[in-house]
Length: 159
Image (cartoon, rainbow, N blue to C red; front, top):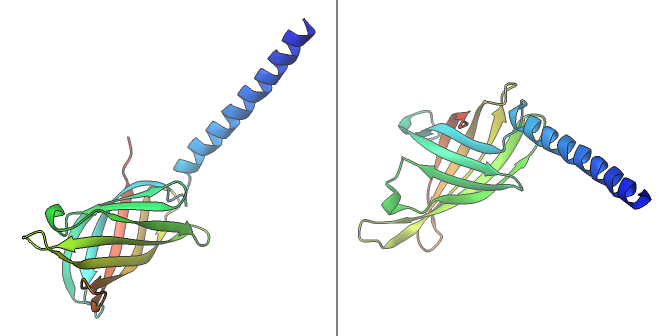
């Protein structure tokens, strides 16, 4: 009987701990400042002098552990790979990110890559973010062709 009580006590403590961890993880996702999750973004690409080149939607997933997966409607998917990269918390509700995708022409020939590096701030609701980024476009030999700027604004993609 002592053994059963001991096992039951351990199970109760384990269940209580698991409940607290789950509640904390769930709460973090909805509190202000948490970037982790999937975001519907609007990207405005400029020449860095304030002249808008174009705007387009994007989906960006900030995965637990610091990885990024990105897909956008700015370039046909047949001409680029998904963006993949990293993100990290910097201060308060601010985050830094960096990702890269490879590009191809319509004959499926590799034409280079693009690296996007930026910062974003999540608002106090945890459901909106805004920031800016630098967009560097390289040829297949790694020669920088152009540097552009981007403004980003997004809302959490949620159930």
